[in-house]
Image (cartoon, rainbow, N blue to C red; front, side, top):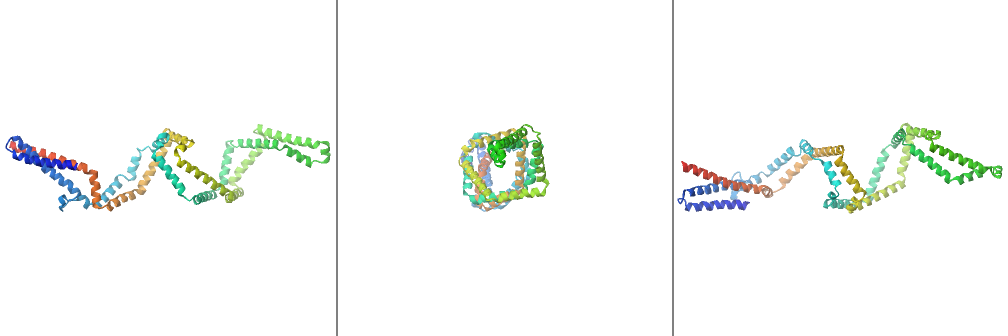
Length: 401
């Protein structure tokens, strides 16, 4: 564009010289000459104006030229303040984020199997795998184990267990547990009949053994226990079940309100946390989880083709269809963006200002000229043509007068 603008200026100069030789050949030649003369003036004036923005025209230190290099630091401060006042204020960010539907955009990305393919997913997978492999696994596992243990030690679990048990009993969700205990006891009885018979036989007197009454007594005991368990299984209001429920209700109350019971549970919890076997188990779980994460990171296609992929796609569909969930996520994203603008806006604009101040004058000039230089050359072209038209108008007025 610079060559076009300069070429047009040279063409006007050539046209001006050519028309001087034929100035009296025809009255119309005067209009052409006036156009070329005024076009040269307009083109030269706009060339001077455009050049003066970035450098000294013809290298001459004319006052008020090379404006951008001389005011580099002031431009940096003004640009930074412009960004701060018009883009990074919480009000502007909040207004902009009102129009951003981040939840449904994420939902579309998750729901479309093809949307998660490509270099982005592969790059994220490689980054995750490299990070997992670079970390000290023993130290990281130990840190995670200690963090979990500290959280569990600080958490008093007895009241939580008590409230959970009380809530389950209030909603009759404890009855399947009692049914399971009764059925388990019946299976234990069936599997250990011989043990009961042996115990009765060994403890019976010689008379009972000689008469065979020990066998009869063992049968009666087994039959009575079996009938008792059967009645408990069939009758939800059996007295023994009621006694068991009373015991569970008392346990729920003690877990919440009895200091001795709560201290007993806390002691058991701490003993369990101090058990080396639990630490070994946790490290094994951690290593298994890390290995699974590494496999998933190295092969994201396989990971997303299984249950995790189905879960992600279902999540994406939910984000698109559930308006309440989408609004909640969008509200969170909006608040996070506003908070980031409030907390880090000054740092961002300071980065812009310091970066521009750190450039030398030639760098600033070159980057700005590359950004707007094409339009500036159009200014030269327009100045040449408009100047020519003004020259024609002035010549016409002069001819008429």
